[in-house]
Image (tube, rainbow, N blue to C red; front, side):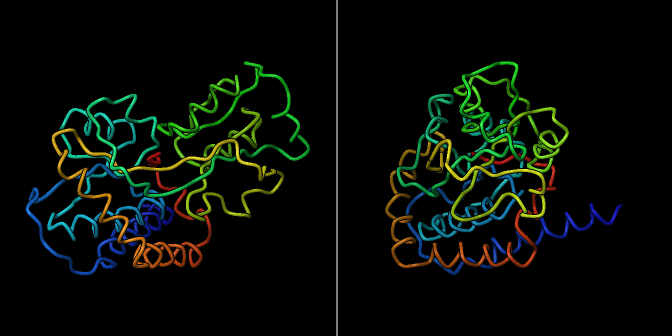
Length: 262
């Protein structure tokens, strides 16, 4: 096994361990004993979301576990009932998968931003042209919708690193990235010769989704999530994972071969 793969594995297990250790004991309620949620631990954002949701479920007396699976497969498994839910998605997810119930409390807020090669910032101001290509993360719904609205041809990447590589090699003209709750998906050193456009192309909210059979649970979770935010626990969890990202460097988990959730 290469040193790079070993390092990636160590980081992955560190995020998973952190997601478990950060959760204090909770209370019980008359709801399902346990649920299994589709999740992808490829960055600190998804690990932080897992920690927050595990705590919310714990406060309802429900044991929540996660199953790591590719992005689109995760949606399918949650929609068909093979799993109980999906960690988080944009609002549009419910339109695509009718058996998913949105938990009516925004888990995270984010922006979609574009990266171009230096001196090519004007590309986004030009009329739509299908000969221009844009790199988007596979399974990233907001990026795919925005690429379509931009009138460009999407080129799918399996990681943020691959999206940047496509841009650097001039295989695409633009690359799209999601910025969530002050987590940086791109290391500054990776922007050499590139330019991050500060003005967002889109803003969005991420919601937790459950299969329709868990209607009672979907109705109970918003109040619990609201209290977790109001009592400062959510901020504590997010700060903890931001600190881990700072220690390892922004975007350090980008090399994990997995897809983002939103």
